[in-house]
Length: 194
Image (cartoon, rainbow, N blue to C red; front, top):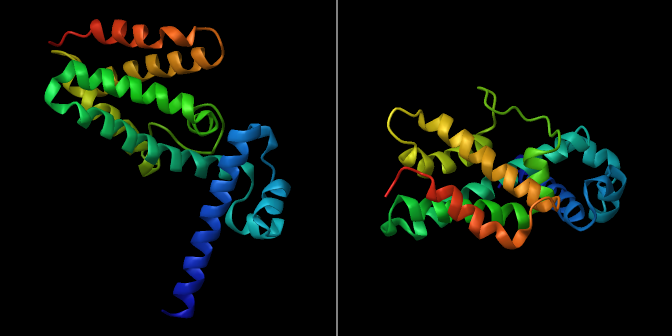
């Protein structure tokens, strides 16, 4: 291994450490607690080292969002494929539950993905691949139940918006969490699939 390859590997490892530490701190204490000073203390590097990887908190939030999007895509695909033989309605139900569960278990990551400014473009050519893939994970299952004459991507956006609303309102205490499964059943039950 060349010196350059070793330095690149060390840099990538340091960057993963910064992102993982920011995520951990945000999950424990909220995003307001994530500062470059605190991150530098926790990872035992100087603030200039952090700035050599990220220009500031906004880029760190974006990096956490990208990692979260990749995780979400994997979770959604796993949930949908786990019930593949049971039909589209069961796959959509599993997908919806997995989405809501991910949002509940990873509130800071979910905020980084959808609530906070991480400097990431959505629904554009410049959209980073992990965000596109997370949407694709939804589309793969939801596109098959969009219905005749309905654009699959538009249907997926509407369904996703509904899931996001459920996740956000439940977390804010506006919807009782004990009714989440009933809401999912109601939502999926209105789909025009057998």
